Amino acid sequence: MTALTTRRFLQTAGLLIAGVVLSACGKKEPPAAAPAASAVASAPAPAVKVYVVGTDAAYAPFESQNEKAEIVGFDIDVVKAVAQKAGMEVKFVNTPWEGIFNTLQQGDRDFLVSAITITPERKQTMDFTEPYFDAQQLIAVKQNSKIGKFDDLKKLKVGVQTGTTGDEVVTKLQGKTSTNIKRFESTPLALKELESGGIDAVVADNGVVINYVTNNPGSKFKSIADKAFQPEQYGLAVKKGNADLLAKLNKGLADIKADGTYDKLYTQYFGAPAPKGAAAPASAASK
Ligand code: ARG
Image (cartoon, rainbow, N blue to C red; front, side):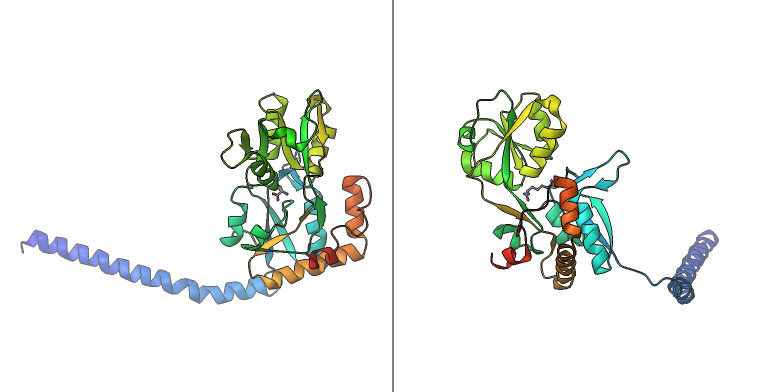
């Protein structure tokens, strides 16, 4: 070794040693400081679990964003009331419908409220509370449309929100390979496309269609009901096997149904009390 390389070597070694010492200090320091810090923090306010609730907030009147970008709606108020009964803290996070179920799997969301229809297929990958709302598909068309029933949509361009029960029924009617099914990221986008004449109809949940038709008279839509549509029920979804949380939510739901909170919210949003016996805990148990 020349003098130069030796010095270089020593410098490098010195840096390495310094690095090791520093990183060792770095590792040692937080644990030493942590107990003191957490003792201070936990003494006045023990950490409360905040449940993260996923919702696709483009589905008025169930969940949408107001002018202040706050997530509001019937579903939101129901969950807030349930949480209050159950002594839980909740935080709503806007979550696109596509992939919303995955967020449960990945643990990014603790539970979901999103006008989610309880279906046998979905029950295989997640758990649902007792139902809290009765729904049905409804067709939206232009007021001057000749469409009169679901079967009329067989060969027409129909808009749906991807992966919804509306998508399912239209896929069943037209066949999996149909190119006439126009799938949208959200239901409002499908309705906008109907307004601009790109499609002939939209099939979506009745509450959402009625809300849109009523609040957007300029769109000149009407809605068409059909007996072909099966009754649906909404539930809150938790990760499969999360029995603890499921029990909490079910208890909260039963409580708000029993003390009139649920009926108050239903009337506030839908203008009339919930039909008697609708979405009652008993009707789910018998399913
Ligand atoms: N009820 C329908 C379903 O479960 C549509 C729900 C869509 N909800 C929403 N927030 N975009 O498939």
